[in-house]
Each structure stands twice: as structure tokens, then as C-alpha cells.
Image 1 (cartoon, rainbow, N blue to C red):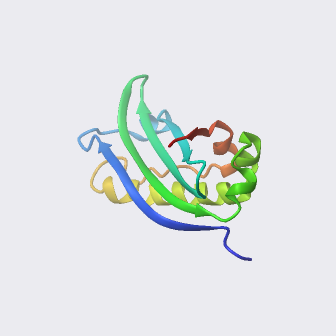
Image 2 (tube, helix red, strand yellow):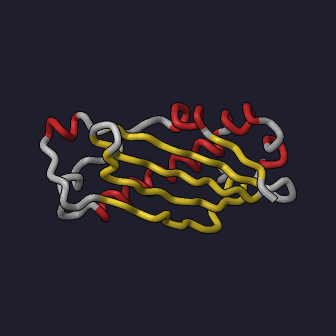
Length: 141
């Protein structure tokens, strides 16, 4: 199967982690994970930016970890989907790229949390189909 996109650049977004927080297993069970996923594109070409952020929160407003990545990619079939939010959100190509983003963030979290209680707390697997439903799409010039 031919790859439908080419990753041109991967950029780690600013990372924040509270290394001094000691969380018990019970605390870890109450950690909430949220995602912010934004796809930016220009009307003039087939290159998109997919910005994916993850945030771990303990209690209501205590952010204990925040990480993210931007993938700049050239999408082969972009012209056929760029004018339809529904087509973008159902695109297997965009879902596959989002899978790369979440895997990359998992690696960042593992590397950046070495030596603290979050080290073995991985992002749970969430299918791209579920994450993409809340995708924000922006056209930029």
C-alpha cells in the first residue's frame, strides 16, 4: 500500500512536567488526560500542520504534565478533501498521521518523565477515530 502522506518536519512543542509531584497508584487512577488537536492548512497547497497536545491533570486544575508535537506533512489526496470538514475527519490518511502523533507524544512523555512518578504512566491507546471527532480545522494564509 502506498503511503498517502510524507512527513516533512516533526517539532516537539514545549514540554512541562512537575517532577516533584509524588502520586500514588490511587492518585494515578484519578488523573484525567485531555487532547487538543488542530489541523492547519492553506488553500494554495497540499501541506498541512497537525498540532497534537496532551495534558495530564490531577484534581480539577492541577496540570502535572503537558506535551505535544507538530507534524508538517504533505498529503497526497489533500485537494480532494480540503473543502469538507467531514471528509477530513473521515480520511484514513489524517487518522494515520494522528496515530503517528500520539505515538510520538508517548515517547516524549516516557523520556521526559524519567525519575518521577509519571514515568510508567503511559497515554492509553485511544483509536484515532475517537480522537479525530474533536479535531479543530483552521485555514491559514
